[in-house]
Image 1 (cartoon, rainbow, N blue to C red):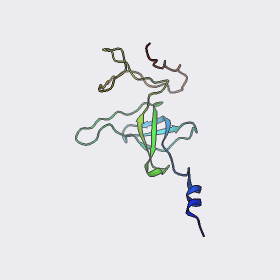
Image 2: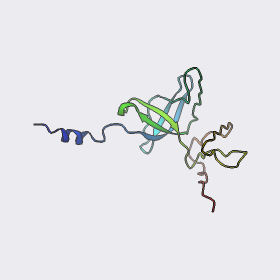
Image 3: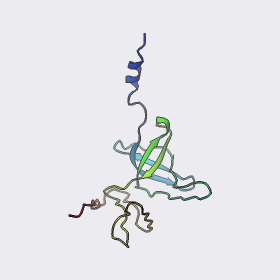
Image 4: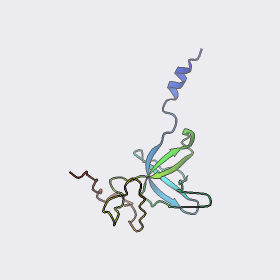
Amino acid sequence: MTDTRMIAAGMTGTLAQPGFGLVSAVDPVNHAVRVVAQPSGVETGWLPYAAMQVGSLRIACVPDIGTHVLVVHVEGDAEHGVAAVPVYDAVVMPPVSPATGKPAQPGEMLVMAGCGAPPADGAATPGQAARPKR
């Protein structure tokens, strides 16, 4: 007799989990990216890149190569993922508002252009982490 608990225990970890990676290639025509998964270093195939808004109002913001993203696998299937959102890290820090001198605060939206692309080779010095003022 087969114990379903044993089958379930054997399948643990076989479903693809969300993970982080770095964009390695961009196809702006098809709004798709390739991502090098971290820390394994395995490059994905072409994945759709999640849009900020679709429909009658469309907002597109294609990521640069080197952008840190979260990859979510649809229904846990490693073959069907979506590069869901860009993530700030120690290399690419949130922009600072010229008006307040701080990153965007709750209830605010800060849109800046011309911040520069992330370093493609990873050789850049990490940014300074924000520390609370005392």
